[in-house]
Image 1: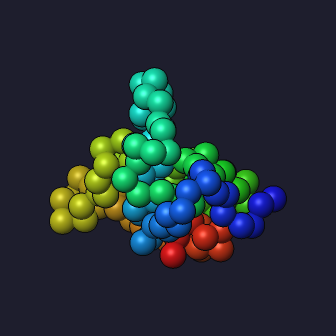
Image 2 (image 1 turned 90 degrees about the vertical axis):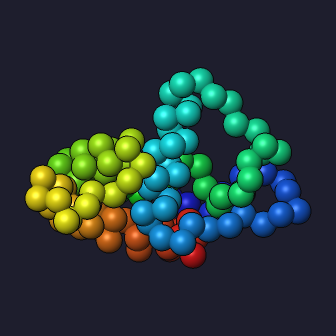
Length: 120
């Protein structure tokens, strides 16, 4: 298992880690959606170099699932709200349960991403 961040490309500009797990998750979901739509990314076209691939963030979530730190319902909530590119709002009664699961999953994802250098 790799513990150091993977270099995206050989560039003089250093890769910038994400501020938090939530930002990393939204970026991951956007990148996965773009990949699904057939968009090819080029390292010279990206605005900010990141210290990982989207699959690295998904792998961290998978590890949490395999260690039973998150359940499928957590992954489902992350997928749904990640596709929307917004977190659930606890001010709305219909989103309160989703918000609780979202916070649990994001909080548990924070440490593994920080250890790998994905979150700064």
